[in-house]
Length: 174
Image (tube, rainbow, N blue to C red):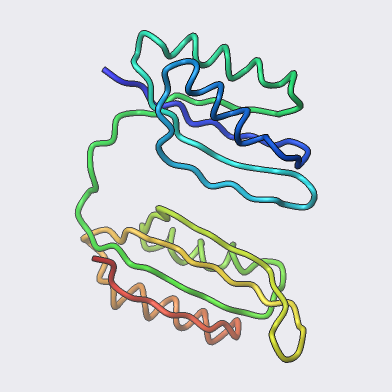
């Protein structure tokens, strides 16, 4: 049986950080499955899911913790086997708004009130092409439970979007 280790890392951004992690994983028999990494505020931050045989998990975890000597701050959690998606519909959301504190809180609050779960979220703050104003952009993949109509969720999000002056696009994800 295999074990998944979820590794979050933060370190001073420099060439070779991903390679350091990849070399450690490979040397300890791990398979690199999923990851998301970015340069954020002068730091390099990432999350990665490594898969390894149960017999190698403790050794891999110890080796990963040893990367702190390379200037990485790490957190390691063992994943649980997934039972598969529980009914419902998957929706892809895109939003664009003038940046201000609270946008993610407001959107995630509506999703939580409807029992929707965020499977993935990517966001960035960028300058508007003509005005140069700070704009917040996000893409989310959301699982809506079978007990909630996607139209119901869409109406609640669109109501919020109008209130926040947010451009929102929702589409069913195949």
